[in-house]
Amino acid sequence: MNAYKKVPRSLSQLDLEKFLATSKKTQVAAGEYCGLRGSREPDEVEAAISGISKLLVSVH
Image (cartoon, rainbow, N blue to C red; front, side, top):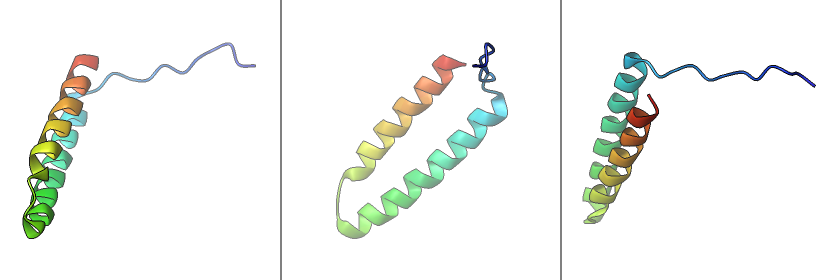
């Protein structure tokens, strides 16, 4: 049994920028998909993305 635990590294600015860029692309894709279906789901997607980004920022 290994006595040393691997500690995750801190999030960098680049990590957050990549996350936000990916989130925006996902949000746009979801909006386009839901727009074809005439749904209001992009609001739910935006709320989820916002929640995740707040969690990531608070961990940093």
